[in-house]
Length: 332
Ligand code: NAD
Image (tube, rainbow, N blue to C red; front, side):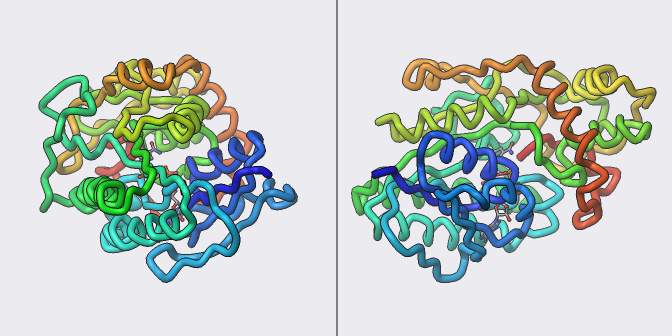
């Protein structure tokens, strides 16, 4: 009998790639999503697959999934700064109440639970690169606190279920990931820069662009998640590409790869924008034998090609970014 997985937030950027991968691995997949920041179109191509089911539901409401479930992969949450700053209460709710419901579902079904946490749990880090043992430097009352603290709470709740109920849990801390199906208006650095480069508009770089990010191509990230799901390690474990580059370098690279004539426009930096970000991935290498395989240049080329084909058909404007929030914080 094939295994059955529930992916919360499965119609989002990462969730849709994960649903695809799990189906390819022979899982039956229930994609649960309320389309708050994701889109049915992201999984439309999977609807014809016999093992795939799309369930429209808000994880903060009572959630019922009929039938057996072997794994719950909890990816539901607004993830880009533009989204979580526009949806602060929904972000806190899905990180808290939504996580409680996802854990309850796993407990009820006797399933393994995997939490998609984030590098943002490290906040604006004072340790660099960030190992899993670092407790972070987060401002709970700043605007970004809604996301960072929701994820920190979700990690604590996951560990409480593990310790109190013996639930079989996994926590992955995802660093900035990019690829096809990101929304051009989600405010994260890469889709914003690609949209601007393809339109011939100036790329809006926050501050002087010297703040760093480490970006991982989506296929590599999904590989890490699947390895973690199958491993016996509870985590938290960092998944990300340790190759660090400045936001300005990233902008210039995208202009070049897109063959664009765009220039760069410097805009103000958002509050609590992290100065540096780079995963220490030694644990993932050691216990999962995992490290990113796709060179960033190849990943960027594939993503630019996808945006070229798709952007005219994508809805832009649901969360139109302001100048100060573009090209700054990178993926959540
Ligand atoms: P996304 O916004 O594309 O996907 C999130 C999905 O969750 C969307 O489809 C949205 O509709 C759904 N959702 C939100 N609230 C919900 C609710 N209450 N009930 C049901 N569905 C709900 O974002 P993403 O980039 O794909 O991120 C997915 C997960 O990975 C998030 O938990 C995010 O925190 C984590 N993560 C992502 C990155 C990244 O670089 N993309 C980095 C770190 C962590």
